[in-house]
Length: 91
Image (cartoon, rainbow, N blue to C red; front, side, top):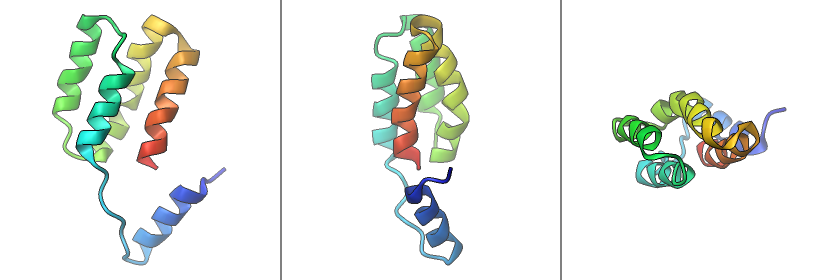
């Protein structure tokens, strides 16, 4: 099922009317929050990777690693819920 928000953005970019790029600092802060209660070694590894992000596309490719890192500590249900928060900001 296509989300209306995602469809709207896709349509606007197709006809040349792009929306403002996502706020990368806000996305990084969200990721830091999502990883706040993950043990330091795993959290720091992800924070290093997040620090190298330049575009939202880069973060999209890190979703799987974020999910894996969170699910190792809290299980898949918690990881899925946290990644959904991220997805809401990316679409």
